[in-house]
Structure formats: C-alpha cells, structure tokens
Length: 237
Image: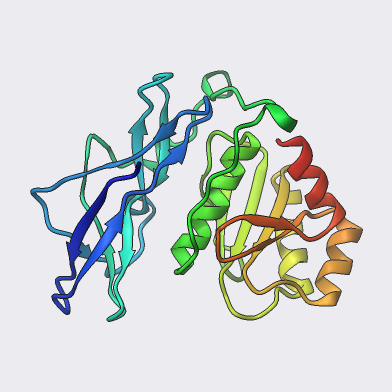
C-alpha cells in the first residue's frame, strides 16, 4: 500500500494528506519515491525540466527510470514540490541513453501489466498520466520534448513525439497538424493527448494523417479516440 503523509502548505499553512504514488517499471515492478521526512515542501515558482523529474532505482531489475517529482496542489492555488530521498535529478544531456542501453519494452497484448495511472487534478497530472501511458506502451525513455508545441506540453521518446493538451478547449486541426509536421521533420511517430477532446476537423485530419488521438479522463487513463489510437493501445510501441 502506498505511503500517506501529512503535508503543510508553506503559503496558507493548511495541512493535507498526501498519498505517495507508485509507478510501474518496464519490468512490471512498482517503483515509489521515498519522501524526505526531515525536509519541508517548497512552492513551485516556475517550471524547469530538471526539477519536474527525478531518477529512481528499481529494486527488482536494477533499472534507473525518470519519473515525475512528487507534487501536491493546495486549495489555495500553490503547487507544492515534495522532497524525496534516494532519487537524483536527471540532466538533459544524460536523459537520452544510447539505443543499446534502453530498457527492453514490455510485450504487447495480454502479457503487458495492468496500466496504473494517477488521477488528474492539475495540468502536471495530465502530463504525468500521458508519460506513464507511453512507458506502459513500451517507450522507456520518456522526457520533456526539446521543442515547445504550439499549445500544451510536449513529451519525447526515441522515435516518438507526444503532445499533452490540458486546456479546457477541444484540440483544433492546427494543433494536430503542427504536431504531425514537427514529427515528420524529426522522422518520428506522434501521438496526441487531450483533456477536452477534439474538434470534428481535428479528428478528421488526424484520421487522414494517421495520428493517434487519446482522450484523458479524470482517472488518468487515456481512451483511444480514433482507429490509429486503438491500434497503438492494442499492440504497444
């Protein structure tokens, strides 16, 4: 069972109970960050790739994986970053391992472990859910994309670009086309995740370009919207 700890917001001084998430390693074993009881949470003033992710060691297979740094959203509007022990911040230059060193992906189909995600309450939760899903599909090196998309947040893995749109408006055709064009220039596949769904023109364009579209529900489980997404969900990476 995941650890639950009280966390006090430094801005409003209110206390909330935080349940430490566990993530699924490529080997199928759960990996959970260990919170540092001697350090206080800090307010997130700005977003930086190095600070949003932490490298954790899997005790079952020995792999090191990059996972979202534990955070908690306070009702006062402050995003809190919780200190961890036993983890290190990944550096961008080290985040891309050679292909020969990348973890072996899980087999597609019924041999894959059950997908476990996080409930979506914030934009960062949406990014976390998409990153966990891509790892579940078999992409072992998921990171923030170097290029920022026209909207939302970009994720990247070897041979793949993903866009996560946590806004309240349906994704437009231009959003899908820009992702597809960026992926084409990098000779990569692409996939789109949206919280608010897709405009009819965006769905038609995605079908024409064979771009997988997923809808993120509040449980954090991506739901295939078109045939390309359903095929990707069934076969894996």
